[in-house]
Image 1 (cartoon, rainbow, N blue to C red):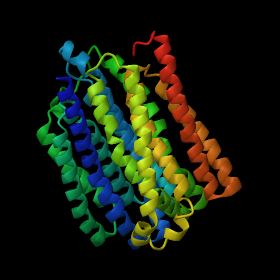
Image 2: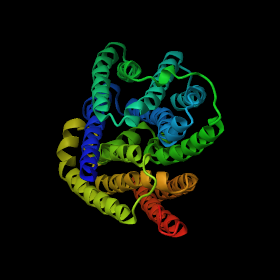
Image 3: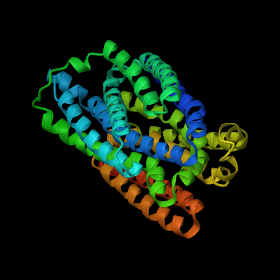
Amino acid sequence: MENQQKKKIVFDMALNITASMVPVAVLQLVIFPLFATRLGDDRYGLLLTIVSLMTLCAGTFGNSLNNVRLLMQLKYSEQKLSGDFNVILLCLAILNCIVMGIGTYLYEGAFYPLSVALILLSSVLQLVREYYNVEFRLNLNYIAVLVNNILLVAGYIIGCGLFLLTDQWQFIYITGTAFSLLHILKKTTLHREPFKTTALFRETGIKSLVLMVSSFLANAINYMDRLLLFPLVGGASVAIYYSATLFGKIISMGITPINSVMLSYFSKMKTFRQKNFWLVLGASFALGAVGYGACILISRPVLMLLYPQLAEQAMQYIFVTTATAMLSMVVSVLNPIILRFCNTNWQIGINGANVLLYTVLSLLLLKQYGLMGFCVGALLAVCAKLILMIGIYCFSLKSSDGLI
């Protein structure tokens, strides 16, 4: 039975990686180069910045609630309770609209009603999708996740046509997420849960807040580069930096779906063997090393194909940015273990320290050494986070007398 479960875990990981890579590959290798060609460096840099803010807010809020549902599902089932989550989802949607509305206005430098409305619609759809697909994970149905992401890509392709007709890039995200969400609503039942609070609302709300803040801080690192660079050095530099990080992000985004599968299975476990932690860490480093080598080998020819106007400048930073992406992948794979088997409050400490260190180092080195300094600052910050996470695991292990 144990061997069968291991095989299923590996199979689910492979399915989830494939499911995640499909939209990532289409966005990064087809749609974003189309944006760059059509919009020019400055407008493309602005687009990347707003998309980063949208993913940071909507993606983080929705995915945090998704993870809380996984962590709390056993309690709700045991107590035969239903509710809370749609109430929290509505609160997060309102918060998301406030943050996105203000952020869009500040980055665009003026109020453009159509642009703001389309961005708010895109972000709310993304948030709702990120939460409701949790039922696929609760049921360990990763085939449904793959089908859903294929529909997401189909919507992206239709949205490309609308973008070419209207010059409004938001339609790509709206149609893609709408196609995906319609499939989720048809296949799941979470949206039919009662809109009410239960005896577990306080515990669920606190856990959601803690995880949302910690996830926001964690994900801020992935998108802060664009959010910081755009007002400091402009859209063209954002476009160059993004091109330099392209391959590392694609590979790391393809590998990190492992953590959602891991958390799905961990949510059903009460203990975790110490040797498995070191096994996961070693395997992640090995996978990261292979990914790093692959990125370096293919970066120049593929960049020349996708971003010929940016390739030469981007190649200056490839070695550093790819190392950062691979170490971020290792951190991402370890995170479900820390999240499930160590105190949840550690998440805020880990990610708060990481954001602070990232911001200080990258901005100081940006001022001193330009864009290369910014890249080195990001690398040093992720190294510090990895060391901190390993330290917290060892401390928790010692505190629990070796039983985690």
